Figure 1 (cartoon, rainbow, N blue to C red):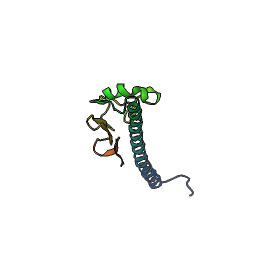
Figure 2: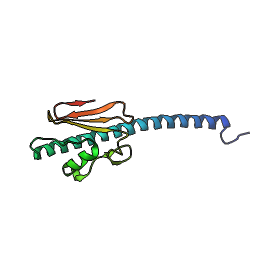
Figure 3: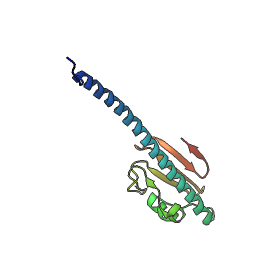
Figure 4: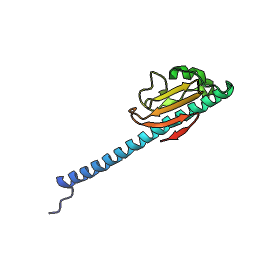
Length: 140
């Protein structure tokens, strides 16, 4: 008696193998998505830094005095590529004070020393991804 087909055990083994491969693929994919978002946040910070330097060139070496991202945005908007503020990679909306929960960007300026610092944090605002200053630049 020659039957064609698969037994239930054979089908279950194939389903388990496919499930394991899918889980490994999904885990790897999520790691690469997170790395891409971090790279986007670093790129946004670099674009803001370039805009700050262009602003400084036009304003006798002074940088904008701003207490938050919204104030900074209006001062450097003309210096940003395409006159658009960079997008936050967590929701693809331009960075602002209301849209600064994940991949948080902070700007501080010390007018006495004419020194600014820009920082971007990771998705959970635990780890500093990138730190820029007009005096020193650090990569993480």
